[in-house]
Length: 113
Image (cartoon, rainbow, N blue to C red; front, side):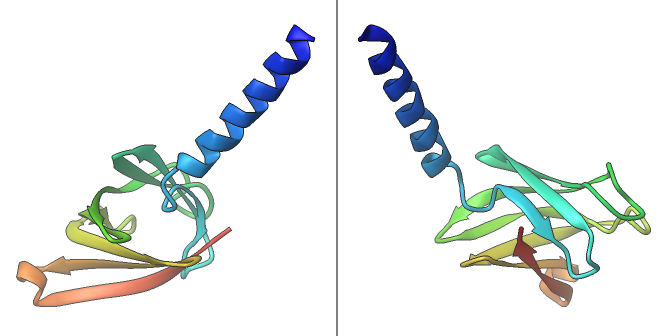
């Protein structure tokens, strides 16, 4: 009896932990078709998992509230780092990197896998 209760409690805690995970966490398909993994708690790291630059960390974001995130994004092709932000809408993540205080920006949309 105790074992069944323990297993049920463990299953409930595991499911609750998944529900508490930030929606930005997980694997994302980039606009170029590569897979990027976003992980962390409070501060999120973005690492490419596939493609030419697999294994490279390309960003760091912190929650800014209301499904918005801010931090830095690095272009893996030239290793330049930009002021970055992301906005989550359902299973789409709009990423953007800017220079000159937001005067010049590039953006792309990623989709949750």
